[in-house]
Length: 115
Image (cartoon, rainbow, N blue to C red; front, top):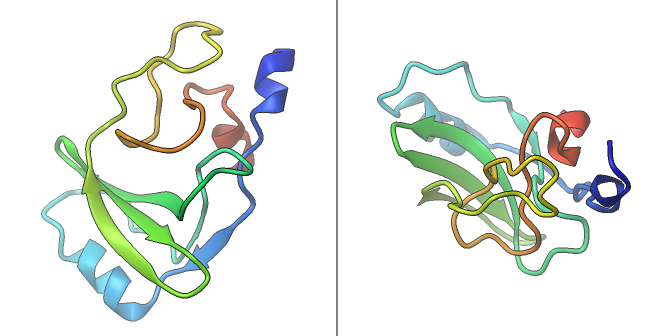
């Protein structure tokens, strides 16, 4: 891992999905592994706004859980079109389009290591 990647630490926030959220994901028309009941924020430590974790992908749409201390919701997004920064190997960003903070991507990302 490069020094620059060490600076890109993941947010430690976590959420436990409720029955309605799990039912929503179970009802999506996609053959995917079952959704975990507890997810961690995939954004950079110190990000602005709500926390976010990928729940499931259906074709080009990614369904992200976004939450604060008082509420949570599931929102559809597409992939972020940017390359990861710093451009260690010019990898595609693995977050949603319009996410706050720096771009995250590839097998050496803090998100992959935290999983």
